[in-house]
Image (tube, rainbow, N blue to C red; front, top):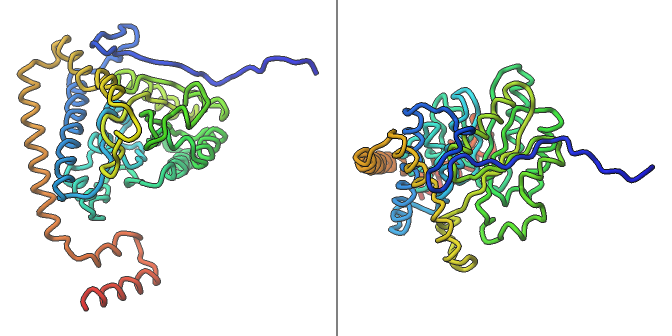
Length: 360
């Protein structure tokens, strides 16, 4: 057999729409109405200010550890905005921005970060899975949901979020492979924030991009500027449309940067240079979108000032709500009640034993 070059069928693309200075590619610009653009900006700002407040509360001992989404708001919200309410969103542990877009209340996230299981409860009618901490373990669950949707003949699409570190886990590869084989309606959104805790991307893979990993599984891979909310929205919308049409999954690599700590138990100064952080701050997705909205007249400077006050009021009100709920959720025995829909006998025995010890 002669030596010949193999043809690579899956599509690979690199995409950017909104530049750092607010300039936009007219040919690629998605035609979004002003209300949607304002909501994108407001939710991104709310997520950022919420993270900043949570960091202060954590340092004060008012909540436990958490993973900020700072810097990754466009990757999350731009992608989630492409979904319908009837679609599924499957998060990892950093998708607070996407959760806010989907309707999770601020007070619920505060409860979760304060250590209350009730905070992980998904609001009624919201098709999201709970926060998932073990790296990449949520990705097979997302493919299972997507396969079920295809089997039942619904038009539901599943979007699953994960970081670059998850692409080094077996769960990722098994799930993407299965989704490709069965053409499951799932969109894989990898937020490549450059660091798997303290491991840089170049020590995780020799691939030129993470989008290239789609090639092995016969699905399209798209690399998009993850700080460009318009680019992320466009890429995600096309991937969702393809999945809904029955044409299978897509792997999106959103190239972004974690501007804050991995979690509040982390000290990033031990493994990355402050100059790198400062460089990426120049690519902050929120000022980029704001410049675009100001230039097109969708926002005014007065609107921005008023919005800052509204967001601050929302966060203060959420703390008051969460604090009131915490006072009603003080019995640790309740933690046994939120593991299974129907409590198995062995867990009931553990609950009873714990209750007796706690009372004693």
